[in-house]
Length: 381
Image (cartoon, rainbow, N blue to C red; front, side, top):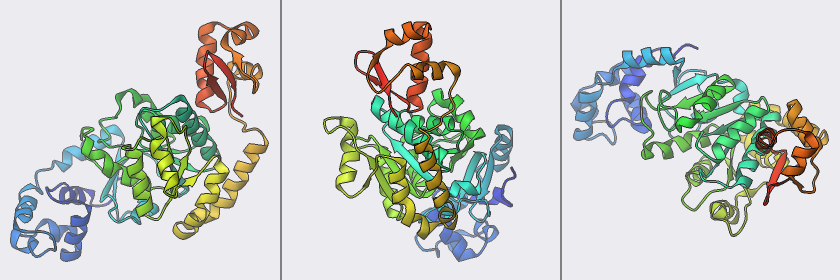
């Protein structure tokens, strides 16, 4: 994919010290073009609302320091393309928020279909229940035609991406780092899979490190790319709640999956429900919640809502036909809704203990099997 026209000039201005998305807009409004903003003097800059002499001097002294040529060369090497807000390929939903990123780094593809998107976010430290639900909702919603957006963090985010990928659907990971610094590092393989079935996205320069201050701004992008946000397990201080607050600010739907009342992982989600977030238990609940939002924000979403409805109904009626390996099919046939011990599965299938354990993990990630205490398992659908 090609970079946006004049992306070098856009990067030079946005990388000047003191220039964020809002200041960038003020500069363009004042001077009329990137070229004129880049050549403005300290005196001219001080006439821009919110830009005093100190900031004006910062801008003029740093707007040529960022090595744009090296950045573009590295982007090409990594297979990353960069677009600015005036590019027709820039996500329509994201452009509607108060402070959309001036430039987006993308590895993979952005398609029109991604306008029908939902975010699934939650705690990095999560329970088995939370991981299962993230995978389940990711799989079913991706099967219905939704693009799943998350942050590729450990825990809930990772499970949501895996769920979408297991359905052969599209998923977008918004990084709080530059795309040359995959984080967390153990998700490097997942990142590669996502780039082939969706996109990795960041507004940060390629070599930016995963600093804590990068993640709240990242969360606004997750909320901005989607019609609504589903929160699955979140503590009182979870970054997932920041994403939910951004979604509220952008008039997008906020949904939460209820959790155990005595679990610290459920404090944030249950609080959201108390405050008016939509309680969701199934993909149908999500579709019902997003109907009005889609009509307000996204013509494409309206166009596709009925199709998504049919897809969800179809998959529910056919017991969610998920692609299974022969080993997964064999073990699933030996499970019912009553608990079965892993030793019984080993005996009845004739497989090794390690093989059965590995397959059961895969079935859990697909949301088809639930593990119970004492190494018992049962069907989850």
